[in-house]
Image (cartoon, rainbow, N blue to C red; front, side):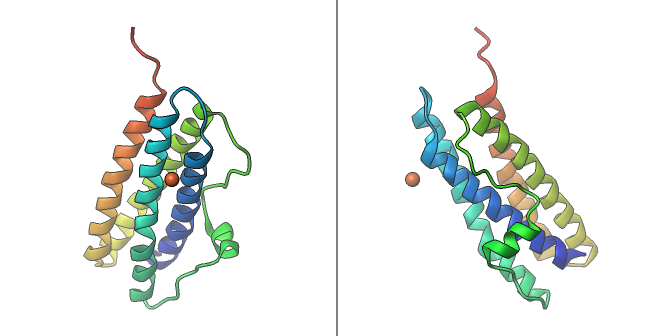
Length: 146
Ligand SMILES: [Fe+2]
């Protein structure tokens, strides 16, 4: 159901954004500047989606969750309490970006089915952004061809 999927997406998007920001703060190594900036771009993109998703839940006639406790119950993306090495940060975010991308696609389809083209359009936009970061994360992980 669309409203439930939006709530799960809101919580998962939050878990994703705070993780990317934590990686932005704590990444170390020779690629520091590049990764610090990539993680910044990702958490800013993710945060920018919160408000709209929460408001879509309201326009569906339901109330939007907004506590760490509820987000933890609902999120399909796990938090990270350790400080992984840079490469592990990248690998984890690749997987989480893939998870979030498939959730966004699922909301897109549910929105189309329920005649919410506005939500579907926004999900298409999010898909576009996530696809870009997925590509950037994957490419950063790839060993050089030299
Ligand atoms: Fe910063």
